[in-house]
Length: 114
Length: 111
Image (cartoon, rainbow over all chains, first blue to last red; front, side):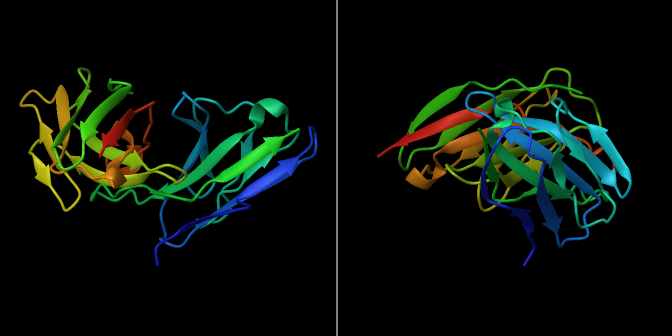
């Protein structure tokens, strides 16, 4: 089954304690992306990657890092989390051939930073 | 990147058609029009996309204006399960295929 898998689904942690949210897709997609969703603000893009070792900032990259060492994985790293990063996070992937494939989303990760 | 404009919210009655509008006056010739929806407590899911011609699938229809500066997502018979936030997005195929989401339209369906 085609899937985008995020872990953990829920996390409560404290300010300053480094954390990583993993994202993995099994569709051999070139493109992967991270979004955060806050009430009234829709989906805002944090970082995206067009392929292995190629990453770019989205609209709200401050306080986040990403890496794309393998095609299937795109972890989101919060080196020193702060309370304003409390949010619902979604990972997504998409094939980039000329068929204009749809984007697939994970089920979300709800982070609470105390 | 070209932007889209959607109403913040819309209401519909169950089993009636729903027309969700989207304006994209700065669309370029290579931009596809995508629609996604997000049900409560779930990640967004793909609904439909098109370039120039109207499109139909099992979920919805997409009507694209002749000048491509606007489009309408049509749900032929709204059900309570169609209550969601609907996002209209412009995106290119291939290596420029980054999709930028906005705030979308929150659709409420009344029984």
